[in-house]
Image (tube, rainbow, N blue to C red; front, side, top):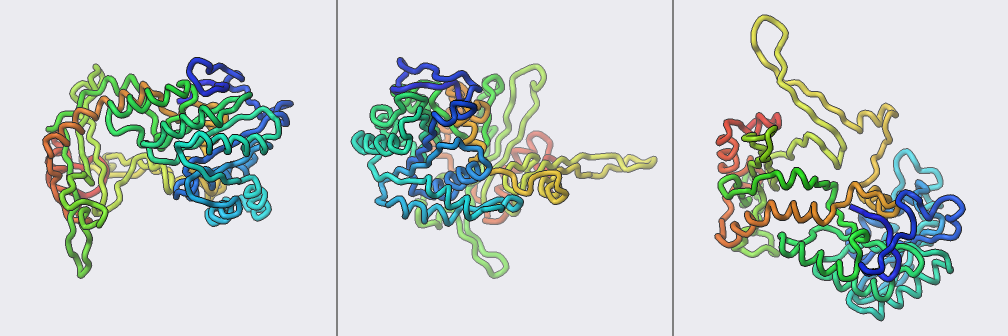
Length: 418
């Protein structure tokens, strides 16, 4: 989660507030004196072009960005400002119900986008970026948001260079880091420790897509045991004259890979209310049908609820009924927006405004990793082979046995036929 604001340099010792939370430097009489620079590190990648820049444009179109806002791409690929603009212009769109002056808005947004070539571990290159940022900031109070759209193994190099060479001298500097944040408890803690050499805790925005953990709940959960978990991997097969590939048929995957493509687990919460109640979870790829989510966040946002109700009459026959909320249906009735903002729009806007709720704190992250790390290590050390299942099937038999241990079927839980 986001906590407060910080001033240069980006160091724990010198981090101090420059504005009270909720007091925006981009509103009222201060907006003309302030500038916002959003630096996308890894700008030549798919995430930047497909998600981050389109999200920035959507915020710009809705007038959610400050008046003096600019976007900078930074990457190792050699590219000009115009080449960056041509690349991202292919992915910019206006919402269905908001297309007034769309072309003019796109042109205006693209004029605010710039590019700087540089190595991720070069303080000299980040110092050159700093000069470009200052030129666009025009002597105003500068607020800088770095978005690390790069692999985790170079997070620390980038943060080190940004802290020494490209942090704001008269405003806050913040950094958004993408998932994955470590691969287990130890690597997550080590990454946090390294970042904290250059950043205060309130400057690190860890983004777990639509994720939000509660420490109290996580610490109440019983550690996962191997007997409460089942993993599988899909294999190739032929059906109806069509051949479906297996996971290891992918040229980039080793033939002896033990990577699971489906996992099921029964989890327990050790408190009085939930004592002895199993929480069954299942997620996988290449299954016979897409899973029905009770809360479908994206795409086609909806809330599905199925209940077993008694059929009216003297008998005791039960029937299954749907209590569904489909946002798309509501938007057709003009009660909801025709398009729901992308998750990255909310992420960027919250980071700019200092909103904390959608970002994960280090203690939340540590609690989440602590729950799964022992199991992950056991699977790796014992080289547990995932149970194979055909592509497009209902998954391995073991997944259904896991549910049967608790006298339920997956269909009972989701409404699908098992």
